[in-house]
Image 1 (cartoon, rainbow, N blue to C red):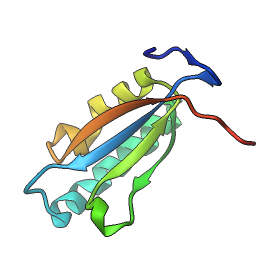
Image 2 (image 1 turned 90 degrees about the horizontal axis):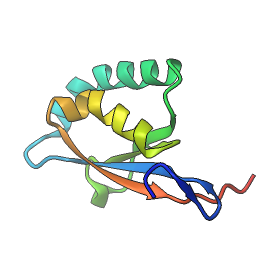
Image 3 (image 1 turned 90 degrees about the vertical axis):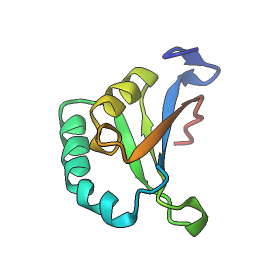
Image 4 (image 1 turned 135 degrees about the horizontal axis):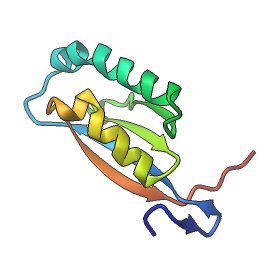
Length: 102
């Protein structure tokens, strides 16, 4: 159902980044300013990024995730994100049939 509708509305997309083997925290932090500038510009330009951030549990390592309004927005983000384009992280896309409880 890529980019389609699920049982509860439009499908969203969760992207989980796993830091590649051999990439240390210092390397991630050196690229972080470019990553931050990229996600801020993506959002300011109307990109469908709704949330992102690192996991805090030690077993998650340096992994993080983002939530996007659609798979196409997630793919567009990944294509330009320095964490990916500079070879630090491998993204995994998961379409998500979110139930919003507001």
